[in-house]
Length: 463
Image (cartoon, rainbow, N blue to C red; front, side, top):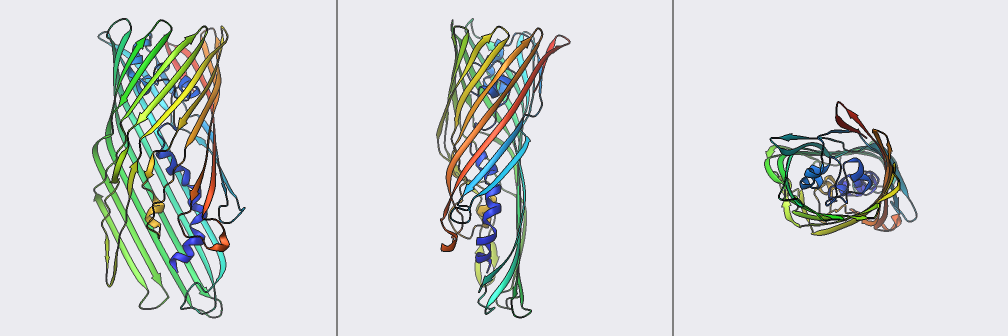
């Protein structure tokens, strides 16, 4: 009963929050800083805005005047399209318009040493979905001979956020070589909840059966990220290198709740199972990464090159969930595991001189998914043993203009992200529903307006 109904009810809402999980396995999905966004983050060796502590703290020595930056939210339009979603030639579309993570940053000098502080909303995703259907299906239950009418409701909630608070320091080794270090305190939280409620009524009498299932988990992690950077200045170019160490966990906590009810089928098949676990052992792992980049002056124009290598992550339990014992039945087991493969991302950006008061920006960057397996809510509900891996490779494009009007600087631009892949459905699809996979196309537009105005001798940047 449960499995057959899940085939029809789980599929559509599953796709709607697919993308939130996919983006957690991509390390270059969000960028920060006015110019750095337009350059698609290809600024390891050439960052010039106050995202310097994030991209390469050694470049902090290149910022002459202390400044303060408040980056308001950049807004983005996202579109998701699925071909053959629940049958051949049956498509499904969804769109979303929202703000993306923001940044507050500033620089200061203390005892002739250069420092920067940075507050980043590193990531933020939230999905709330409800889906209801009423369908007549033949012989769902062996216990009810003939046709039955069922109604089902699915509610899925997914929410994750990560905030970084950092302090950066930089110094000059000589006239050309600079070093810098950044320490970021990270606060990470992820919550997932699904609730399934099915009711079946026999078409010819008053026999009624129901199934209810609720699963919820939450993970909270406090940790530290450490970055070290180098910057070398040539006559017509700059070269930068940044090493980012894996996440250092300081405090981790997991919670889990499960409830399953089957009623109305018969004494031998009716069921009630509940379990609530607090203070579970949890972990969070991220890769070691090395980024190298260069800013090359070509006359009045500038070329930005960037490449980043990420290490893999061995399979581990995000939350260690104990099994739930049952009398005369196998124990109920849950897995919330994650692993990642090594990947290599690269990109290029250009800074084009148009007029003494106008510059243009164009850029491209890859953003390959590192997931081998990922911890997600649907895996907790899957009836099969196979891992449901939401893995997408993204490609980012950026472009815009920098306009100078005496003491005011205005930045206008946009970025475009696209991904297309084939997704294997997490359930066994019956032959009348067609293919066992769906083609996914994801598109995203970000719209950026940056304004820089000197106030009290300092520059305030507002997106």
